[in-house]
Length: 198
Image 1 (spheres, rainbow, N blue to C red):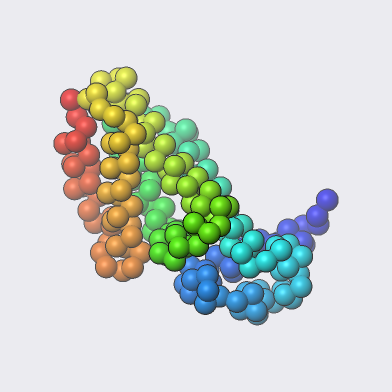
Image 2 (tube, rainbow, N blue to C red):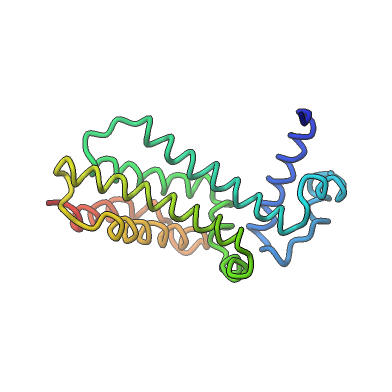
C-alpha cells in the first residue's frame, strides 16, 4: 500500500502538471518543468507516470473525477421543485465552477488537445467521458422537467447539447478573458426558459 508521503507527491505532481498543461499546453510543458516546480525528481515522476503522455491523461482523468463527480453529487444533494429548477441549478453550478476551477477549464478548452485525441484513444475517451458526463446532467434535468410538466416535450439529448453548448461557449470566452460568463446568467436562464417552457 502506498504511503501518505507517496500519495502527497503524486497529488503535487498532478496539480503542477495541470497548471503547466493549462497555461503552456502539452508540447511546451516538459517533465523537467514539473520536476522543478514540485521539487520532485524526474525519476519520481516517471515512477508514478510512465510518460509525459501518461501524466497528461492522469490530469484529464482527475478533472473528470473532480468536476463531473462533484457536479453530479451537488445536484443529487439539492432539492429541486421541478426539472426546470434542476436545469437552472445545473447552469448556475457550471458557471460558478468555471470561475473557481478556471485553470482546469483552460486545460479543457485548449484546442491542441483535440488534435492529440484522434491519435490517442485514451485521450479521446477521457475527453468524450468529460463532455458526455456533463451533457447527461443537463439531459437528466430536461427529462425530469418533461415528466413533471415544467418542460415541454422535446428531444432531451438535443436540447441538453444546445444548453451545454451555450453555457460552455460563454465559459470559453471567460477562459480567454474576452467576456465574463456569469454576467449573462439571467439572459442564459431566460433563453433556456424560452426554449423549454410548455
